[in-house]
Each structure stands twice: as structure tokens, then as C-alpha cells.
Length: 288
Image 1 (tube, rainbow, N blue to C red):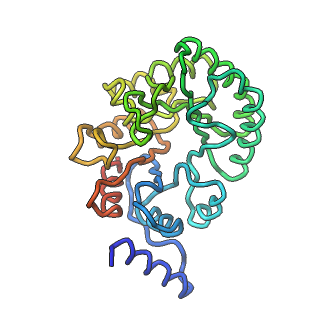
Image 2: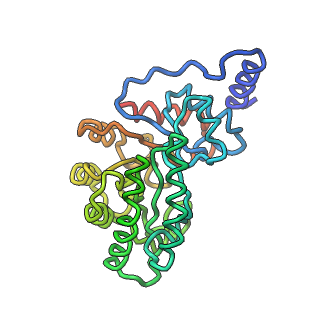
């Protein structure tokens, strides 16, 4: 029996015996709130089992957990830290002006749904350029976010503009033709909008590929950062000694600056490794 299967069988046995659905959590002493992605658990793991393991690891929430399953997160005391919805898609994003009317209506309603369900952040994709200049893309993004910022401020939900890499064309590793593929572009847009509810989703994996100098970029743009994602470079696997980034140092630097928000681990476990053991190692590295 695989370790995760054993954990799952014990979990469901405990539920059947009337025990609490929440397992004993590993004590975390760090200053950051850690969040999971379902992809890091490997394939075929039931959502309830993932939630139980997340709690045991000391997680505070999940990113991109389906909205229909947010009640499950609530059952385990977990937060839907960041979600994608409101009509926003990663390829189209917010830079196509012809979509702004429809998108503003759907996103406005979705921000309300997030507020009602305790979801503090919505991912905002810049979208693909299709020949559009970076300057025009920035102007269009600013126009849309200015249109939405009052609603975001009213609901208390942060719109998080994600930095991605455009180097790798496979969507498992990058986003071809993405407009928001450099830290400075995202920072310019957020600065021009000037709202506490418009912040950068600083994906460390993507930033390392496109800009490097990760810690210096965090320090330079720290007031604009609202959320972090992690993954190993190269390969988008776990953040351990097999890759080029010192994540403990990077995340400690963010915490030393005063960051107390979520850091979410968005990676695929390396083939042949136990996903649960790997995730526990990742949580230990990020416990700063």
C-alpha cells in the first residue's frame, strides 16, 4: 500500500469512527501562511484526503481549489487563498478592451461570491499580446483594474496580477506570448492603479526564469506584493536541494521585510518521489 493510500484509509476510518475530521497538525513556527495546490499531491487523491494532509502539514489554505468545494475547505479550517474565475481566463486576461464590459460584470459578481466565502484573492491574468505592445497592454490593464478597484475595495478581495514566464511554450512550464512576463510591467500597472486591493502575485518560479535577481526584486517591489507562488527551477518540481533557488533564504527575506501573507506551492512532484513526503519537505523549507 502506498503511504498516501495508508494515510487516506486511516483518515476515512477515523471519520467512520466518529473522530474529528481534523488531524493533529505539525507545529509550524514560521511567519508565513503556507498554501497548497492539488497538483502537488499527485494524481488520484480525493479532495478530502488532500485537505486532511494539508491540515497535518500545517497549511492555512489552498490556491485554485474549485469554488464548488469551498465548503470542504471550511470544514477543515482552510482558506481558499486565491481563486480563478469571474470570467477571467489565462489566455485572454484583461488587456483586450472589447472584453471589458462583459468581464467587469462577471468579475464584480465573483468578487462578491469570494467575499461571502472568505476567499481573499482573485487571480488576474494579463493575457496574451497577439502583437499588442507592452505599453498598450499596460494601458488597457490599468483601465480595467481602475474600473474594478472600487468593487474590490468594497468587498475586501484583492485582485492579484500574476507574473508568468513567456520563455516556455508548454503551459505546464510557461505562458507563451504573455504580457505580464516581467516584474517591472506588473509593478507599473499596480502602481498606476494605486489601490490596496490591486497587488502582484509574485510567482518566484516565473520571475527567476524571466528576470532573476529574485530577492532584490522582492525588496524593490515589496509594497506591491500580495501573494507568492513557489516551484523549483528548472523543471517546476519541488523546492529542494535539486534546483537552483535557495527558497528558505528567499522566503525568509520576504518575512524579514514584514510579509505575513500566503505562500503557495505550485509544483509537480518529481517522478518516483512520494508526493506527501516531498510536500512535507517543502513545508519545512518554507517554515521561516
